[in-house]
Image (tube, rainbow, N blue to C red; front, side, top):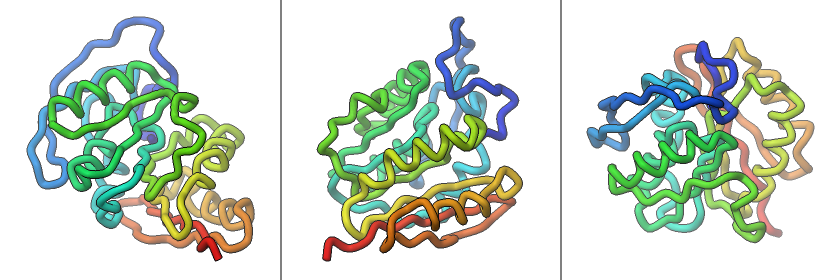
Length: 207
């Protein structure tokens, strides 16, 4: 998830146990109670970038495999599961505390989510949609490698929606995606609010 956090290492599992707290939030029109913690991105609230993404992204496909790339404590994956209960929602993160909290929060909300490390997603899974508040502060090399690993796993004509803060390089990422992805892919700005851009990345057709 994109960092506006004061914790620079939220994308790694904390070495020591972190204090947890319960927070009341609204996801997919429902009031839910979630457990958050220090040591994960935005460990005390639903961050602004994620709120922009959840408002601007279209309703996810009703079936198929959906992906939350960099799940934190789970608000994006939970929203996907609440909106598309017949879909299989994957939530991935390299932070094992984030995965634990996502699983806990999803079960509490009755929103089935499979929260796993990236390498635990089977290689043959292809996604009907990807939503992400990507970890910009990991650095360009790691961010670019992550996106080039997961975006090509979209099904033909399926889309990813990425939210990125404007002053953290949203426009430069937009330009990079346009040149880094193969011919036939499209990258457009699908929304903009409160200093954030929502980029829609669409895979080409199978023809």
